[in-house]
Amino acid sequence: MSTPTAPAPPQPNAPVPAALTPRQTVQAISGLMMGMLVAVLAGTIVSTALPRIIADLGASQSVYTWVVTAELLAMTATVPLWGKLADLYNNKLLVQLSLAFFVVGSLVAGLTPNVELLLASRVVQGIGAGGLTALAQIVLAAVIPPRELGRYAGLFGAIFGLATIGGPLLGGLLVDSPLGWRACFLVGVPFSLLAIVLLQRTLKLPTIRRDVRIDWLGALLITAGVSTVLVWSTLAGNQFAWNSGWTYGLVGGAVVTLALAVVVESRHPEPIIPLSLFRNRTVTLATVASMLVGVAMFGSSVFLAQYFQIAQGRTPTAAGLMSLPMVVGMLVSSTVAGALITKFGRWKIYLVLGGILLPTGMGLFATIDAGTSAFIISLYMVVLGVGMGLLMQNLVLAAQNDVPARELGTATSTVSFFRSMGGTIGVSALGAVLASRVASALDVGPGGGGHGSVPDLSTLPEPVRVAVQNAYGDATADLFLIATPIAVLALVAALFIREKPLLTTSAAQRRAAEEGGSDEDLPVHSAAPALDTPASGTGRPNG
Image 1 (tube, rainbow, N blue to C red):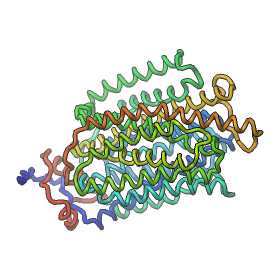
Image 2 (image 1 turned 90 degrees about the horizontal axis):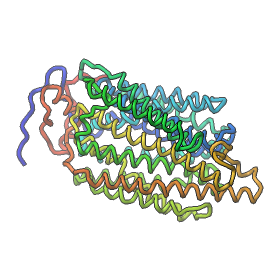
Image 3 (image 1 turned 180 degrees about the vertical axis):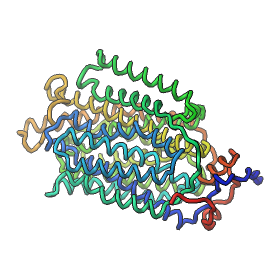
Image 4 (image 1 turned 120 degrees about the horizontal axis):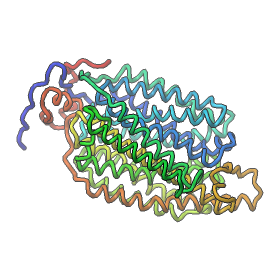
């Protein structure tokens, strides 16, 4: 192997950070791990509590969908902006700011007296979640080379597993306890505050001073266009017909707004989503695959908690337990794949395997009904979970590995943005399908499933209860049937991604070299010695 040519020496404003030892790396990302715990915990707790929340507030199936969609919409619309800010400003402060949004949203949600304020608080939570979604991967890539990310996959896998396994269980216990569902929102507040403190004490990132110009007009147009699409996909088929004047107006308005956004982005020196990114084949395919995964995954799995509690009549605690096989599948697959990627440097095989298992799991779920046994559902959930675990993180890794360090934040947030947008469209559109199928099965008239309150099984007479359970069981299977071909398209996109060797220098090191006048990587060292080098860098940290 030939020795790479050393790049030009960095300028004083672009110091080269020294590699961190494993202990220093764990210390540096401890606050980030706590932030991820908060984000995942909030979602998994609330998913179990939603049926009880909607019933207590006397809301409808449409509101059930909107409680999920409001956060996803805000997260989706703000991810590109957070990603662009990450390329321009201090990442630690941005993560702390996103956690602050999360704290405010959680407090308001936990104390809300009505559905309207609950939806508003979910928007604030979504803004915070957008920051965590975009910034967590960016900060990780800044301090850990792509080849070494698998070394720390076990830590993040443990955090993810703790939140995803414990979340539904904790949510069910809180809902069934005297504390009630409000505690599901409030329980994350102390963790968020602790994460802010840990980040301040442990995360040190070098500052690279730049003259910055943020494309606020482009951000506004992208947010408006995407939000219009998401509002349309939520209301169409529920508040108005798919083929109607409202559809043409909203879709037409979204197309015009997004077209203007493309014009603005192409002319601005610091665009929110640089169009040049899509000249990169890997980024383009990873973005397409992530969007399709979002539609299939979020759009179907978010309604499983409702399926367990309504179609199968289980308690919130039992519904939380039912999600464990999928969570374990995600945890084990992502952790094992990460370790193997670090050891052998090969990653595409895991993308392809995940791309096969995801539609397989979706297709299996398309066969369920209200009477499907817990054992069969558990098997299906393992298949679905393994597919998700192999796909999601590795699509981001592929994109991060194939862009200059100065575009890392934008590329990462772009992939996350389209995955979130796909998930939001999937939740809203498939939620409308669910409402329509339930209304049709129960013969309550057009839109009845969307506007009628979500039923409380304990108050229904036996014949009606059975009819409701069957309606929700069959409708949930229909959602997975619709999502299956979408997941197949994600596999097709993954197949066309070219596998490239993983870089062995962190983004912070590459960025310092680029800002110093070279676009080449720093000299490549073997993985182990790089991590054992004392962190005596000369860069001034943003402490």
